[in-house]
Image 1 (cartoon, one colour):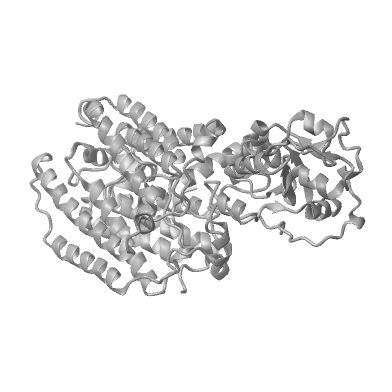
Image 2: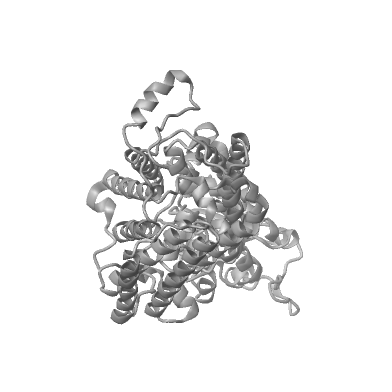
Length: 195
Length: 420
């Protein structure tokens, strides 16, 4: 945890020195207290609603990036699926949406905080009993499942649970219980991956 | 009522996007500082070892909830302009279960994987790429599950409305529940997680302030019209209300005027049997079987934006069913011919066909033995001869129907919302 050098060991040696120089300027600091994070996140969430009327979102922005790429490659195909055409039919630019900018900001903010706290570091976080490769396959698989589920539920942890939770949306509260139920139900069977 | 701000009006489109970008930066920063870029920390939640996820999520929801309802209670924030996620009950629950499975296998959710990827966590990058693929697959396969995806739509529904309990009481109850859950989480972290680290004492002070805030929300109360929809929406609560209030049934005279005018691109769909259609139909009406009506939505994408769809059956039953199908797929420019083809013939055929005594509901009431198709004069009456007054229903504006499409959030016309 403490102040080990943030050297990106896994990287090719040519890039090693440059990256290492950039990312070891800042000492690795510990994460902030969970309750402090909760209060800060609550204020950010409130400000999002207070200023814009919209909450937060992540998977919606990712969705629009995907549809944007699809629309570049196969515009006729996008127009033939109402769900996609809704975002990118005809001249509509799918990136012309608030959630895309929130997503870009999330990436930027995550990087900045990681940078100044010395946590930008090429690494794989996993349980001690599995290999990096297994972890990557699981991350990809989990991401795929999560991406599908998030769109079916019309929002992810940010767009449904946080945003809908704070505005007391019935569906969002039930959604939240479902996410925890799904994860807890399977946790035992993948315990090796994390413990 | 000055908030939320009309961002695009105030700052222009780019200024508005800059505000969203800054909100995103704050969001990403807080997620990273909480340690949500680290999958092992997130996954520990599900082995009761480190309940940071629960504390941060539930805590943030409570803090934001209290602040939102404090400001709506003070009349500063207009709740009707705040996006409330549309409740699609079963798609939300099934999607949530699937997400839970993805969470424990992959170790992130979409938002946290972005933060992980931004801080060069390789597992975060793999997860984010996987999420893109999953989202892509959903977009490609959504037509196959469209019916389920649009099912159990309860519209803009909040817990206080659903439970019929005062908003302030719900806020206090959720806050109290959260504080108890946090206490329980700390016990679990000590017992299961063997955490010895001392929790800061200030958290009790914070808990006190938060609880006082919740009590304050209950004390100041909420405006009586907190959950009222904006005025123009009051009449459009859902498809049933539109049908019952006769908002979508257009008079034969209106249809005649519309088909002879050039304001709209008219698409007439006749959902009767082929035999009825062959016997008589209105000029330019296309015959389509009731169970094929859903396919019209695909043609609609290429239709001009001034298109108006009019559905007809012998009476109104099948046409209304067809209308529901279209609306469930997000169509907002469809209408039903009032009185159906029977009503049309009664109005325009001037008694040239004899009425059958045996016609049941939504059956052909006139005896037409030849296959007249659209050759009869009543198929295309002369509009100059018919100047009867009628109440126009078609305004050119899309029908505002409690959300049928996940993205645009029609329950909130001014801005779109949601994680769409």
